[in-house]
Image (tube, helix red, strand yellow):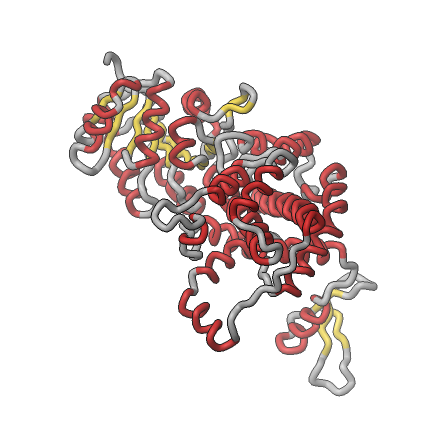
Amino acid sequence: MTGKADVAVIGTGVMGRSLARNFARHGHTVALFDVAPGRAAQVAQEHSAEGNFIPAQDPAELAQSMSTPRVAILLVPAGEPTDQAIDMLCEVFSAGDIIVDMGNSFYVDTERREKLVTQRDLHFVGCGISGGESGALNGPAIMPGGAQKAYERLGPLLESISAQYQGEPCCTWVGPGGAGHYVKMVHNGIEYADMELLSEAYQLLRYRNGMSPKEISEVFSRWNEGPLHSYLLEISADILQHTDAKTHQPCIDIICDEAGQKGTGSWTVQNALTLGAGSTIIAAATFARAVSSQRVHRDLARGVLGEWVPDTAPGGSDLLDNLEKAVYGAKIVAYSQGLSQIRTACKEYGWTVDLAKLASIWRAGCIIQAQLLQDIMETYQDGDFDTPLLLKPAISAVIKDALPAWRAVVSDSIKAGIALPALSAGLAYLDSLRCPSLPTALVQAQRDFFGAHTYRRRDCEGSFHTRWENPQRPEIALS
């Protein structure tokens, strides 16, 4: 080993060591630091055959081992550990050095940290990364934000270790400030939706169509040869093929049906509400996880309301064809909602996220990689990011074709007593978009009645309030 490190990785847990190995495999000398004594040296020793590592025992030694301007990548737990790591680096780094947070940090925290770090003449980059442990090691999708000037130094490093799609790196500068962590947050929201839609398809095929997990796996594998092709569909088919070695039962039947979450889905939903973005499928998928974890209430409900007995009535090829169209239509709507939320955030926060480039870097390496993303990238090449994806001509034609099948699936599931929260939410969203007269007229009238919140009329401009307490109900024009 000779020379100084090109990049440092702070935190040598599963993701940190995988990313460090990725850098080393691509010819970069990697400095390592971990607060756990001896861990950095252990990682360096275990993987010495893969490239050059320089383990550091303290922050000063770390800084001395690096070429300038320094680039340090944080892969430590979100929250206080991230703040502590930033403070540590600020004490030993010099003007122009770059600190990159690749953890799942909340974008608001990222913007706060950038302001603090910038005051010390350093660059701070909030950077989304997707692909899990395997992606970190073999090539993830990378979404750096922060100052564009920092990307001049950072870009070649990250692009060298990112996933590649037909020779193009799945890494691009996303936008200033917290944009990198924001788009990763919404990426995860879309991921929640995608996972829930496939799980609902499984549920319907299992309990309405009476199919075994292995039979459903075969259906998913066939779907994966068409427009629904995706990483999540591929692994779902694989999971449903697996038999538990201990019980010899389908693995899916011995896994507790309580889905966990680390927070990015709920952050996405909370932000959607703040922005007034209609990310209803993402919300339904997030709440589905919450309901699944209410074990006490679920057990009580079966005792109070009666056992859940689905109406199994195999629908044959019609159900399979309808369900495939419904899942694909809902998948498009979920992506459309997520991308529209990003666009709304750009206007609110002063960012300029290129949705075509964003779709392009999600085509490989990340959890939501899918054939659909190629279509999305091509659709957004027109530069019109304001028109929702689902209303673009080529995409809307697919939605229109899917609607009858989608409606048949949701209607049938309701009659059969099988909950499909995300598929139902997506269909309701489309029906609401198309409806010329929504029931929210009554909601606004109610708001005006009890809170004098005013309303707008359809036949003229301005805001109005009716004096509901007055028997004559006079209307007052307020603007």
